[in-house]
Amino acid sequence: MGVRRYVSVTALGPPQQSKIRVAAGRRTGSNSARSFISRREEAATSAQPDGVSRAKRRRGVGDLVKGGTPVVGLTAYTAPIANLLDPHVDFLLVGDSVGMVVYGFGSTLPVTVDMMIAHGAAVMRSSSRALVVVDMPFGSYQESREQAFRTAARILAETGCAAVKLEGGAEMADTVRFLTERGIPVMGHVGLMPQSVNAAGGFKVQGRDRQQAERVSADAAAIAGAGAFSLVIEGTIEPVARAITEAVPVPTIGIGASPMCDGQILVIDDVLGLFTQFKPRFVRRHAELAPLIAAAVETYAEDVRARHFPGPEHCFGMK
Ligand code: KIV
Image (cartoon, rainbow, N blue to C red; front, side, top):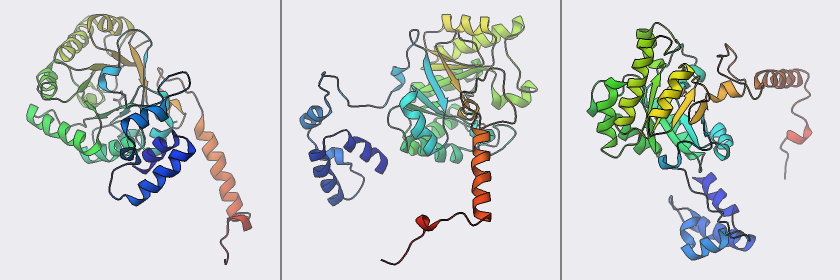
């Protein structure tokens, strides 16, 4: 909460800042400094000379729009990364890819609800603008609609995120309807579904033969028809992704599914060049951070071993 309070305070001028910091310091509990400002004062202090309001609100599921400027999504699993990505994206996905990217598992299957909640809460604490969607991990929703509801409700309540994502096609439509009719926004995920890696015999591009293409399209229609507010299409050939995007009324978000989707998402470690074991064909690295980190750590180790670090400026002394 501290970070968010600081952000709202810095939007004000110096006199208001000091008044609010004093007030906030006197107050205990979770109420932010914002509760000390009347609505009128807040509107006045956040208005720009050109009349544009500087108030920033967190995006909701209705802010992902179909058509127009493509929707921008990235995965985030930790507080510092969420903080850096938040101003630039429409939504942050706390993906179960956390299992492979952060924990080093060979698949997403070992990821637990507790892990998703810990990472989801960290991302929520460190973002204020982007819609945050948290993945439902394998085994936490497939058993029954009721199990799915309990898991989704726990994720929403314990992270504060606005929506969950689950993988599955027509067989999950009933579950998606059960959740959406009970106030839980759901992002669907069709095409290549990493949680089904064992049944699918690997991470395989989908839609290459007619039967598969028809199945992925039917899956997308079923999940959108069940009330999902958006659909991730993963690892699917362009004509199928295009046909789905044209057919469903909700925004499609592609990952390895061509530019024909309404938006794109990538795994942040791929974009930053941090995950270097392999590079999927659909990834464009926008930075190569792995060698930078290796070089920084090498010079740190050299400095310590040569007693060049810490220097006098890093030491505490007497008063
Ligand atoms: O877990 C994840 O990162 C995802 C994306 C690949 C969409 O589901």
